[in-house]
Image 1 (cartoon, one colour):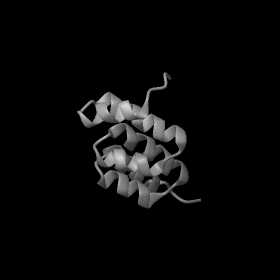
Image 2: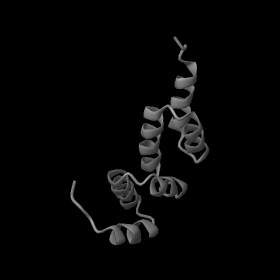
Image 3: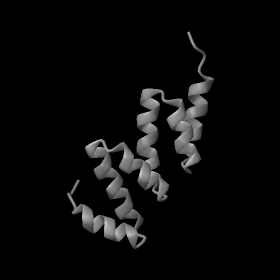
Amino acid sequence: MTSFDRETLRALADEGNERALDRLADLAEERGDVQELSDLLDEGCLHAGELLTRRAAAARDLRELQRIADAGYDEASEVLDRLLSVDPD
């Protein structure tokens, strides 16, 4: 992936460019910056929701999945439902 200047991406995102918002999420994911991903989700970045959902599902963090779903990423609800539906051994 081509590296872009974070400040430029932020400026574009602030002007409504969704692709720039997605790239900011990718950069946050690369750095492991969960807080920035959460902030981006709060701004409406569904890509950040996808990345956060993957992390929460891997960690089986049910509360985080619920928070992500509440923030507007519907697929987190589906993942949460799947995890809750699995019969424990």
